[in-house]
Amino acid sequence: MSTDSDEFSEGMPCWADVTLPDLEAGKRFYGELLGWTFDVGTARFGYYTQASRDGRKAAALVPKTDGRMPTAWGVYFASSDAVATAGRIEAAGGRIIVGPMGIADFGRMVVAADPDGAVFGVWQAGSHRGFELRGEPGSYGWTEVYTRDPKAVDAFYEAVFGFESTDVSEEAGMEFAIWTPAGKPATPEHAVGGRAVLDDSFPAEMPAHFLTYFVVDGCDAAAHAAVGLGGRILREPQDTPYGRFAVLADDQGASFAVIDLARVRQG
Image (cartoon, rainbow, N blue to C red; front, side):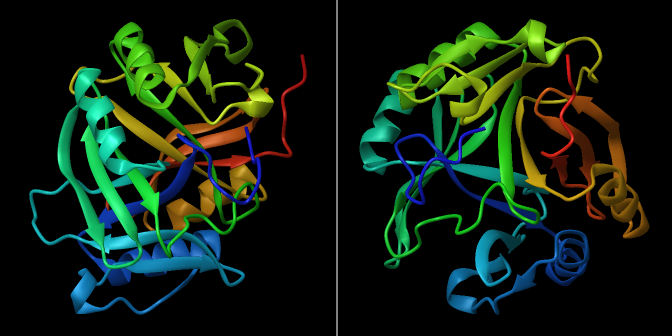
C-alpha cells in the first residue's frame, strides 16, 4: 500500500466521500467509530461536510438530495487534467456520469463508471488537495474494485491511469490483482489499489463497486464498535498478508472496510 509523498501523482486515490440520507446520523456513526470531527457544510455546496482526524482532512459526508441516489462510499483518483482523463475514460469504454465540472476554487470533478459499471471519481485539485492524512488510524488506507469482468476492467484502468496490473492471487488467497503507477515497481508496497472478482460467493444481484478501507487500531474492536453504533458486519475480521480487515456497513447501509495494518498474516 503506497503512501508516497503528500502530493498525489496521476491516478492515486486522493479523496473519498459517502452519500447518506441522514447527515447527522452519519456524523454520529463515523465520529464515534473513526474519531472524526466535522466542518459545518453550507447550502451553497449542498451541505457537503468534511471530516477530519486530529485536525487533518480525512474524508467527507454528503447528504442525499435525491432518494434514488445510492447510499455508498465513493473514491476519487487524482488527475492533472480532468478533461483529458474524461476523454480517456470514454475512449476505454467507460461512461461519464457527471462533469467535468469545476467546484469553485476547490478543484475540478468527474464521476464515471468503468465498463462493468463500478462508479468512481476523478479529482483535479485546486485549493482542495485531497487527503491530509493517510495510512494512520482514522484515515484512508486502501481501495479495490469488485468486478465480474476482470480482464476488461484491468485493461480499462491501465488505459485511463497508466496502472500496471499484477496478479497476486496466490499471495492474497483469492483472485486478486494490484495496481501500481507507471514507472513504479509492481509490488504491494507501491500499489495504489486493487481488483477483486465477484465470484459465486457474492450475491448475484451485487453490482460492481469500489470498496474503501479505513485504518484502525484493532480491527475486531472496530467491527464490534460498528455493531454497537447500529452498523453490521458484512465480512468477519480476517488476517491477510497486508493486515487484519473486516467489511462493514454503517447504520444507513453504506459499506466500507476497516483494516489494522499492524496485524499482518505471516507465511
